[in-house]
Image: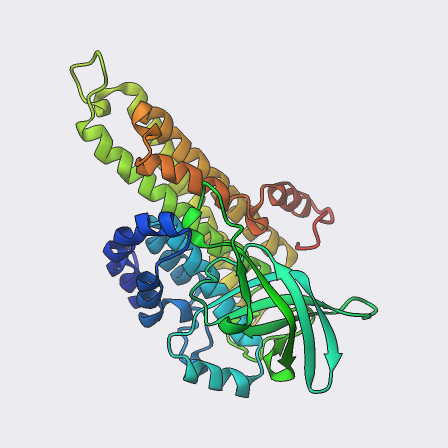
Length: 382
């Protein structure tokens, strides 16, 4: 999808598609991404696509990031999701770390992979030189192969409530086997736990109320916009794969009691056309809204509330439309889509999970409408 511009990292992601496809079944069995594909993506620089340039990151624009995530997600939605989470944590977390600490971390770990949970399920107690931390965080996608986990904590006895994030090495967090699901099964989104761990100050960040240590346009974008548009790449990539699989199926499948292939059926033609229109229109809306925000920050400004609302609207809408596009071809495919190994059936299960994530949840469509009509939002994210 999209031929007008190909960033080198997007091209790299496309070149990795055969490897990702070859690992997809193993990911389903393991319930997490295989080591080989994670290391290949890390070695190719995909996890650093949104990391500061001074640390060897690409500090890429939003459209490039979406397209790279989309390319991997076309090959397998679970592995695309793992990459997306890694891009967010390496990019956002890296920009908030103490610069000296971050420089050393990125230099020491050229294939750095991070997982994270910006969900304050930990408790942090101040001690000399750092913090004593304990907690259990759900949905830590990619936790098996991450170099570090980045988890949010509530500071004990803070008034008003203060939130910090701690960077925990792989050997210091426990993976709890909780990810037993149907959709996005291969993401390894298990719970992780930390038990009374000492975390030094240099390994601590504060998302709330703190600006990144870098002033490039990427770090002037609203954080919630970044957390939303990345999810779109997973949804549209999964949907694109489903539509392409339907075309291949329709060319050779001959429905029962018919002498013609599936593609000759008017219902199949209509459903496929509607799916293409829905997916392409929703994706274009995201690119338009995100590009407007990007132009604003590139010109030295800050995104206003209307722009933020438009991005959230576009992203939540795109995920809903990705579901609709997959559902249309699933219906037209007939019983073939219900087979255990059907790529359309898997896409249907996977894409539904993307839209359940908070950053692209459907309630933001209504809340964006409030903002665009001049009302205050109900959700603090807007």
